[in-house]
Image (cartoon, rainbow, N blue to C red; front, side, top):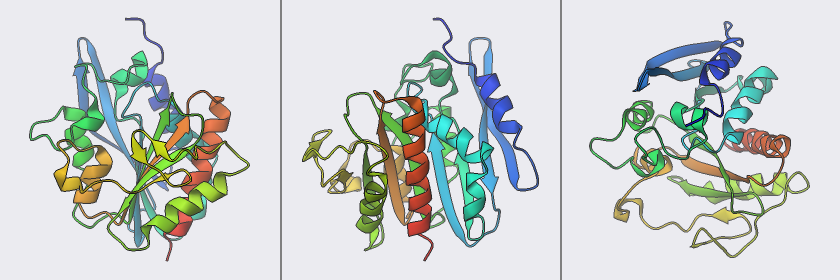
Amino acid sequence: MTTKRNYAELVNRLSKKLNNTLQFFTLDHIKYSNNKYPFYKIILGDHNPKRALISAGIHGDEPAGIETICSFLENGRYKAHLDQWEITILPCINPYGFENDTRENHENKDLNRLFKDHNPPLEVQLAKSIFKPSYFDISIELHEDCDSHGYYLFQKSNKPNGLKIGVKIIEALKGIISINSDKTIENMPADKGVIHRIKDINQMEWWPMAGYSLSMKTDHCLTLETPTKLAMATRVRAHLVALDNALMCCRQ
């Protein structure tokens, strides 16, 4: 298989932002053949009162989320949130998939279907290790959808006001990117770009990362989906606006 992207170049790009504000941790290494990919966690605003988890790259063929995190750091966009937020970032959960432009990892497993498994792949184990019960106020997962004609999001909350966040994010994106307003998205009922009527997480045979986040009593769990068919710059801009609005909505 021909390598499409270079994970080492991504790591170098991220590490250039190392300073007193940003902490860079290697949790372990994902080993495949002769390759050894360091699995990174980044923390901004350590010990601030509000806590957010932002992740990307669990599907390796969805690079817009990873590019969004790079932009979030490189352009100093995160600084507007450090008065209140401790932000934990998993910049690339699936390094093999990122390099080879595959949804799955090197074992041909869709990592975002295995968060309920008792013995999941190492990438999932490391992502799960980030969580503590009731620790995060919000988790935000950056995805993209090759079949969608517009932006949409999944939302599930352990708090009663959760739906307002998703609605505000979609409203903020109008004029920036097309919105998927279909009444059914991914075979689930949707309301103007927001999918929130998801069945009881405990009744699901498998969990995505957002399902595990919900089970760990994260207040609000968002999965943001930008349409792959649009230009990378447009997809990244939309994700950045969505990130800003999600964090602003949860400041109270």
